[in-house]
Amino acid sequence: MATQDKPVLHGYFRSSCSWRVRIAFALKGIEYDQVPVHLIKDGGQQHTEQYKTLNPMQQVPAVEIDGITLSQSLAVIQYIDETRPGPPLLPTDPKKRAQVRMISDIIASGIQPLQNLHVIQKMGTEKVQWAQHFIDRGFQALEPLLKQTAGKYCVGDEISMADICLVPQVYNAERFKVDVEQYPTIKRLNETLLEIDAFKVSSPSCQPDTPDDLRA
Image (cartoon, rainbow, N blue to C red; front, side):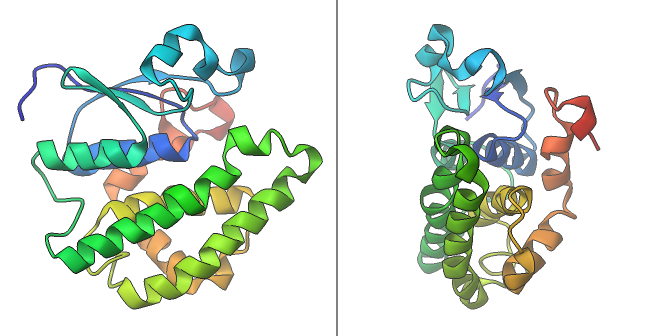
């Protein structure tokens, strides 16, 4: 599907969900514009009336593309995959495609929402322990699954949506001081993926809204 207008990503440099979309755009070679939405400044810019018209859930990302606005990162990634050329982000084989979706959903539904900003802000002094508990719980499920499905990447030897979800989640695990050494398959996959340009250029360390002290 051809379009003259570049997509617009409304996101936050350290948001896992925004990062997933940035990776997908990079893998597909899609140029896009970014509009930063600071999740903490001024009580959270995602709560403004203007932003609520883009994403009524008051979360990032929101992506304006092809005359529509999409939220929910996995929906955005699959739309990009279905409408843009470039390397496929889901396998053609139905079993592998189901495995990619399973791994992606474990991360996007079973781990990340339990340690995202909106939740941990409610936890007070217990926020680090809370995040560690739910990341560990998810990784304990993910590690044996990935041992079965992984080749070079999460499912076989082609990069997929599962890999797009994995890297930001490992970044969060490290932020919350989870011992990733306990999960050798997750650790290996993450290290492999971080060597790929699409993952490097989409990193939180080099976005337009990355604070100077966090830039790499």
